[in-house]
Image (tube, rainbow, N blue to C red; front, side):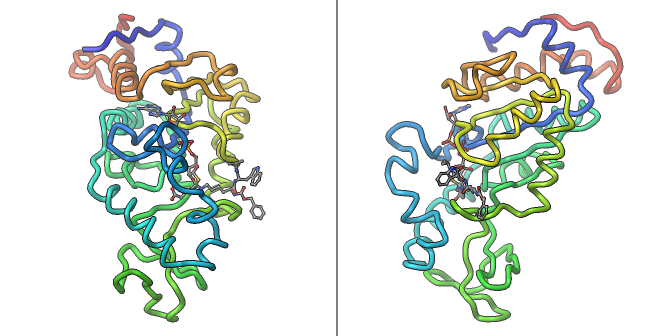
Length: 263
Ligand code: BJW
């Protein structure tokens, strides 16, 4: 049971949306037990300087330290399970003509929850990449602390995007194009502080898309959104999807057919 309520306009817009972009950040996976970066005593950047573990310079200086830090996170991600918010997003994708899920998270939980059209903008920590040639490995062929590329013997590195690094240009282009071409954008669990992801909601706004934010805390985006839900995603999103596509109507009506909405 949930005490979140949704107004009829929001439900109408959701049901009639042609292309929804969802932008997720670390708060999306907080309820799966994965630490966020910038919030509270257990946040990652509260406990370690990103310059020490999340820059190419840091990797050049002390690759073992960088690997150790990422391995710890990788293990917690591999053990984590998708939460009700991830599952509600996968369900939402089934209901709308087009949904582009842009995630800054590197935990792979959206795909594990069943989402298909996922852009992993900052990479995937369950993979390693050759630091020289860029070949991606789904598993690490040699044990840490310093795994090496089986093809060229260069160092492998975590397949993530560190500060000061360019994002994969094809993924960035896809994400940018989607943000300029949607009628609704839902920002979930991101502080909106890291570029270029932080610019996507304003791209969508410039095209008059409806902006929604789900985040217990206010962010720089908050003053621009039409609907701001100041609660955890697991509290809001499953209820929102159920309000737009009530389970009883789902049993009776094919997807996309009209149904009476009670809000
Ligand atoms: C909940 C919740 C619940 C909690 N439900 N919500 C000035 C100086 C230097 C650099 C720059 C600068 N200005 C701009 C830059 C560029 C830089 C940047 O943006 N820096 C800012 C910090 C200022 N960006 C880059 O460097 C990017 N590259 C780039 O721009 O390249 C350009 C270039 C051009 C030419 C040559 C070279 C380069 C790359 C950025 C890479 C970011 N990498 C990281 C690590 C990824 C790998 C990994 O995870 O291991 O990405 S940093 C970290 O921040 C991670 C995240 O994806 C990213 C965003 O954080 P996110 O997801 O928003 O998390 P939090 O913790 O900040 O927020 C969580 C939110 O959830 C909070 O609001 C909570 O309230 C909420 N929440 N529980 C819903 N249950």
